[in-house]
Image (cartoon, rainbow, N blue to C red; front, top):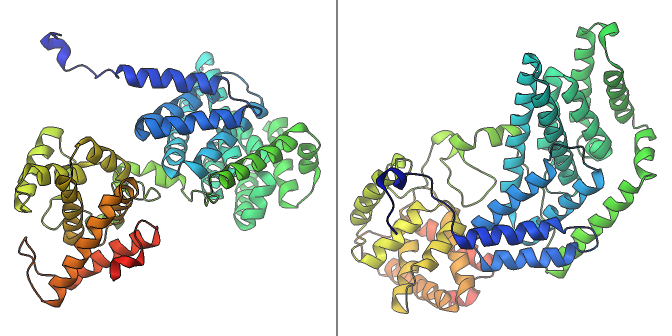
Length: 455
């Protein structure tokens, strides 16, 4: 189909497969409830198996935030159901979805709160109402994610500290919501941090005229003091209601789903608000295999001789530089060059694995994936777990890769014993041996290879 020149640079529309997947997932989430959660979970799990994980993560995140971040006051039971569903996906599917969900949700909370404060200052009533409800609903979801073990107390405490800075009407409502839903669990996890927060609130109270304090503000301070002093009044209000019964039931569901899939419940994400704010400069340290610039820019995740700026330039320039780098690394065949570019330009290990499969390599060509991956691992100044995760995925995908990794290790042993040169002409120094050892240690530890490779 002919596309006029003025339309060629427009945003790329999603294909029919993406739109069909979006309609399917939205239909499943529309029907989500406590009674049918397991069947909906199985359908979503099937979507992950049969489609791009990136697409499913994106659609799920956008859809759940659209449902929960609605401009209306939602029942806690509704939000709790979605929090339990997210926790189940986190335990069974993996960290990528939950990390993307928490990041997007936290950024939207900050954005909505900022828009609320601006609208309040400019007296724009409609915008104030919309952003207030969206922010409140998303903070409610965040608090329940903490209760279900998806995030740690670090992020929740950071959100509390941000709200104390202004203590607007919205901030007071957010504090009350967090204290009501997660108060006693927060106190159990980190009582010292809770004391610091109480001190900050008391300091803020001392700065204000007692006559100007609203009844809601006084109630928030009273609730926080009860929590600090471990008074059970707040907890009794929750336990005697239906919310706690539903929460305990959903916690059992999350645990049982992990047991049925033979997986263990994961540790909560120990990510803070500052980590999410600095993603563009420092990357996502909590998501292993994602692009990362190193501690304060020190060290490099790229092979020796690679300028780290090459992968952040515009697409055309980056492709040109990667081709030059491929030639410098002696990737002389089209197959090796394609594999090398995929490994160097992928967003993370999931993206690299999917793109390697799309190369549709056959028989002997597939073996080059292992050779190129090990070559790249060799060239790292500091061991990069990204290659180990890609290697783990391809080994789990096909038994043939396990055999190739075994032969590659034997070849490396021969090179070390004979003090010979590799095919590429690089000597086996201590750094390369160390990187290779860590790569195979990861594969054996993950169960992708057995100790038989050392025979």
